[in-house]
Length: 133
Image 1 (cartoon, one colour):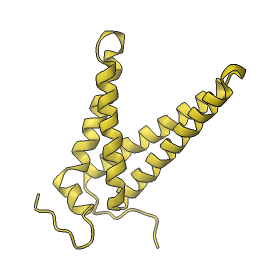
Image 2 (cartoon, rainbow, N blue to C red):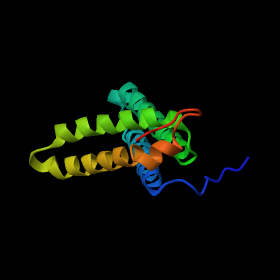
Image 3 (tube, rainbow, N blue to C red):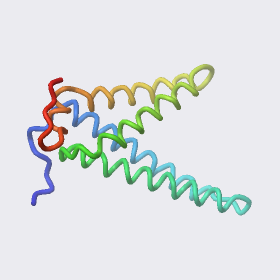
Image 4 (tube, rainbow, N blue to C red):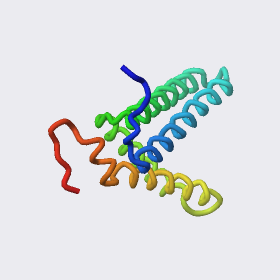
């Protein structure tokens, strides 16, 4: 069994998976920063926050790798993450955080477009499922 992805993966799927991997790495970095800033007054909150973001980041990295390998199960958590990202972007719009909101929204939309591109849907189709998109 080869760990290398098949060469017939469409570019939109590769772009989407790459952006998801970057999101996963950023969440892992956030977990490390949260651990580094632990304070004796909030040990439990800092530890659980770190564990949550580390698990979420690792999960996104697994999903990104699975997308590149053409495994359809990874679609759902990736789409859910992007929809959450759009909600977060909406909450950040206005004021000094507008740039952050635009960045989050652009990445989320790019990933969703890549996931729902017809060529990506064909690659990610479950066995026996035919996409007529």
